Figure 1 (cartoon, rainbow, N blue to C red):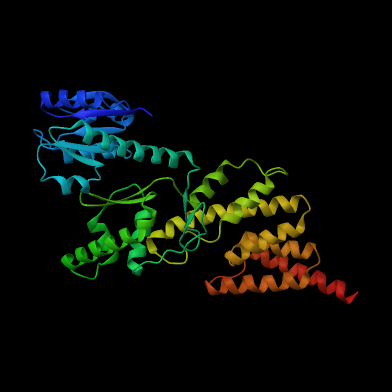
Figure 2 (cartoon, rainbow, N blue to C red; figure 1 turned 90 degrees about the horizontal axis):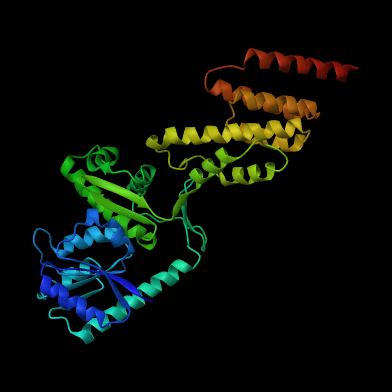
Length: 382
């Protein structure tokens, strides 16, 4: 394979010499040479490049700073430092450089470096050519991580606050959250200095916990705060929400799809943890489930499939015992299908649920219930 390279050195003579040396290596194509590299105006070049050979000591900006910027533009880039000084070796590898070559560059040494680069790039391309693995984060009910080629995993967190901090950053994914917001959320009861210390320790524990998922989740330090960045990662309830919105009108062909979608919803958004900051989102997503379940129940009822209609109305009443519409429909369905004892039991459950929140059965429902009871009594006496 032909690898594409960019060369950066503020000394034109050194730049020219390196280019000539690389031209002796058949697997390298030099795209561009720069005595000063402006990353903002050369984005397309860097995205096309496989390897960058660069000097470390350059005016205005050193090679380490430039390397960080280039890796942000093209994370798959291989960086090779070329310099006259060897005191930078350790720092070079800290920024994930592939290699470190001393000037003047020797041809045989350069060939070894290029071979290493070729092996690394080939390995990456083979990994890309395989079926990509996705990370699914399940937030329906309890938090779980699920790689597509493995069983779901309940992640073990060092502390409860580490889990909450991760989930809060996930809740605000791809947005920078100020440190003060985080300390106020989790350590409002302690002074600022101690709160910051707790925050830094907790961030460290989160990074360690997420180390096995570093290809999918990046916890990035930004000015004054932190940001959680997701790559090749999906969140179950948001995939569910999108698919639900894209579902066409319920009919014979779409009903199986709707049933499969509703099976994804295992529980409310992070409902196992009771976070106040997650409540509004939980209610919003729960309402979408309620509306979809009501539509399914109504569809089955209209089609005369009373057992399926009953199943969905029961689901609705179990999740929301005080829901008037679902309870009313279930009463009437039980009455229609002759399940009088179940109708009576459901009415009493509903009545108790309303009493627990300080209200009573709506007049319309109470009137229907009394008329139904009288009708049952007349039939019994005949």
